[in-house]
Image 1 (cartoon, rainbow, N blue to C red):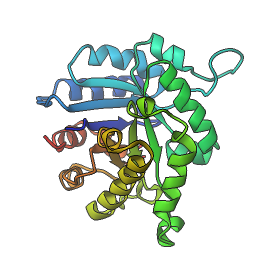
Image 2: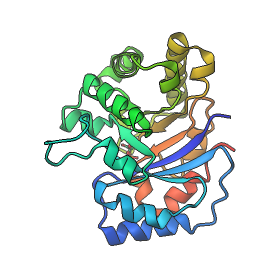
Image 3: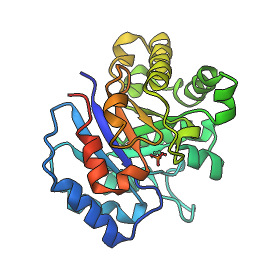
Image 4: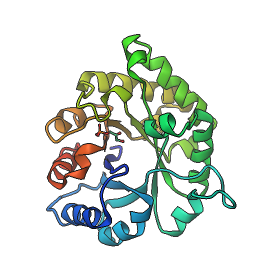
Length: 254
Ligand SMILES: O=C(CO)COP(=O)(O)O
């Protein structure tokens, strides 16, 4: 089976004290991860090392950065490089979240560079894609997402694309409490997989986890994650509450 992933995106929330407490509550919870299931905590840069310490070597649990620079190193004040993340032992990085695209002008082209550099340094990208509300209302979501994949991913070799995780996050469902229905999620995530099949073949596309993100909660995770092409979730608000996120982890397909 493909990997099933419960990924938290804490975004720009929590003090270090709150962050450690949250991570401790998750790590110490009686969670019985199956071999193909994993949990990834996407934390703010300054918390990477301290949260990694809390996570320790607990099997199946990883820490992710929420962003990285498209530059290698040098005079780029305020940036954090792939090499820095690698040197901390970080294994996952979220790339192309819609908030980065919208508020920090990250284009599909810049995101292609970020994917390259992440892969060069052995990081697993969680590549986000998804359409805004007006595109969904015009029923153009498939073409919109296909374009994001084409412009950011399709320069990658089959070997490299096999290393990534995709997160489909419709912008209209992020932080709004408005979740895509499980049918909507399944439909477009099956489309994403079929696009990847056309480009890379079924063996590759069937191996890539495609997560759903956008108002995932404990009370809708089982239904969403139960869909054939939904391999877990990228969770914002609900990942800040230990009991909610633990229930979401426990909703992964076994
Ligand atoms: O953006 C998200 C995860 O990256 C989703 O956020 P919410 O779960 O708060 O809607």
